[in-house]
Picture 1: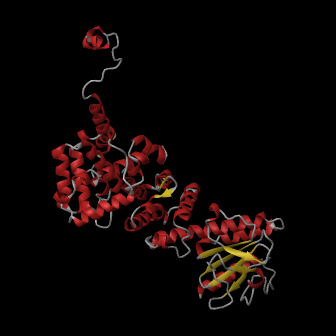
Picture 2: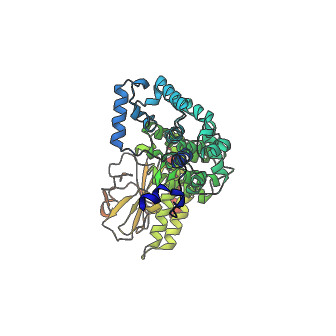
Picture 3: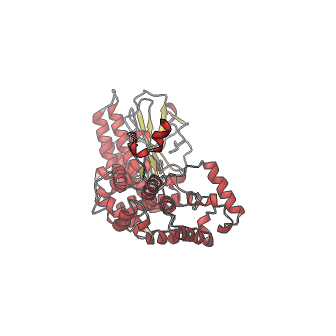
Length: 446
C-alpha cells in the first residue's frame, strides 16, 4: 500500500507547509552581507592577524603570492604595523583591482570600516583607498552612501571638516552625535573621529572668544567612552594633537578674559588629561610656551583662590583677617609668578584632587598654607599666622615650590631664617597692607 501511495504523489494529502525556493537562502545571505558587511570587526584573533601580516611580508607584499584564503582577511590588516601593507603601492592597487574584478562588495564594506578606523591624511595609501571607495559608494551598505552624500566621507580633506562643523553646530553629546551617524565602532574610536577632533580644534582656535560655548563642545568631542582620544592613537599623532588642542583652548585667552564657566571647563579638562602644567609632565612638552603661560597663570589664580577658601573653612579661622589677606593678594595677581598650595590632611582640593599641591604636616588637619613667588622672593601665607613670611633670592632656607607629592612641608620648619615680614618694625602705626605693599614695590624696583 505504501508503495502504491508513493507512486501516486498527486493523491497524497501530506504536502510541505513551506516549500523553499531554489537559491532563495544563498540569495538572502548575499543581500544581508552586501547590506551590512560581514561584521564590524575581524572575527580572527589578533594572533591570527599578526600571522597574516608575517605571511604578507614573507611574500614581499606581492599580491599574486598571497594565498587565496588569506585574501579575504587582508582588508583588516591593510594599515596595521609600522610597515602597513597598504603603503606598498603595487600591493594596494592589486588588492583594489581584485575587489573590482570579482565585485567583492562585502570586502568593500570591510575596506570602508578599516579605512575610517585607520584614517591618517599623512599616508598616501589613504587617498588611494578613499578615492576608490568614493567611486564605489553604490557597492557599500548604509550608512556609507548617506555619509558620502552629506559629509563627503571618503575625502581626506572634507570629511573631518564636515563632521567637525556638524558637531560644533549642534547640541548633541559626542556619544549622541556618533550614534546618529551610525559609523562603525572602529571609526568612532579611530582615525576618522580623531581627525574630526583636530578639525574642530582649528575652528575653536579661531572663534573661541566670540563663541565661547564651543570650548565645552570640543572638550566633549575629545573624549570617547571615558578615553582621551590622543591616548588611543600612535604617539606621533597624539603628540601633535595635544599641542593643537592646547593652542586652540588656551591661546585665544592671552589677552582676553574667558567667562568663569569656560575657564573652569578648560582648567579641569587639562588637569584631567595633561596633568598639572606646573609639574614636569611629558604631555605638556608639545604645548607652545605662550599657551603654557596662560595655563600656568590660571593655575596660579585657582591656587590662590582655593587656598583662601580652604583657610576660611577651618573651624578656628579668623575670617576677617583672611578676607583682608585675600583682597591684598588678589589685587596683585598680575605680579605673582607662581603659587603652590600646601594642604593639611583634611583639606579637599578642587578639580577632583587633580590640582597639584604640597602636603602640609605637623599641623591641625584643616589648616592650609600658600607659597607665592614674586620675582626672586618666596612668600609664605599660612592660615594660622597673623602675617606673611618672606625669603630673598639665594636664601637656602626658602621652601621650594612644586616638590613631589611624597615630600611633606613640616609646619615647624617653614618659618626658618626668614628675611622679612610685615609684622616687623611697624613704627609709624601704618597698616600691614601699606608695609607689605611698599616692601614689594621697593623689591621689584631692584
